[in-house]
Image (tube, rainbow, N blue to C red):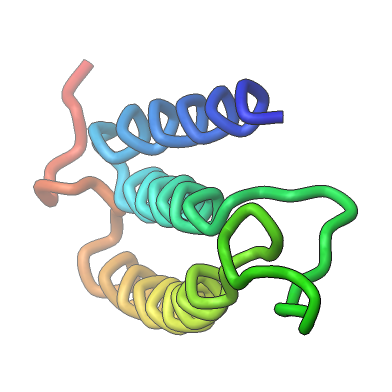
Length: 114
């Protein structure tokens, strides 16, 4: 399980970095979103992944990460998802305004000459 999650985080982060380095603003926006998702998965995995365990502390068990999943990383990821969605929507609106004003979506404002 840890290997699959690590590979998913690595692929998403690598793809995000590659897209951030592209010349189009839409590709940069998608790359930033992929990086945010990779970071969210990493934070989520910090709370100790457990399958079939109780999400809260029971009276008979000691309150350690061996017996339950830490809810703080889950709440941080949920907050980050909401904030990321709002900023992505704002960036899309700015991107559409930029494309309408300049006629293109190149990062430095100039299209490549063939």
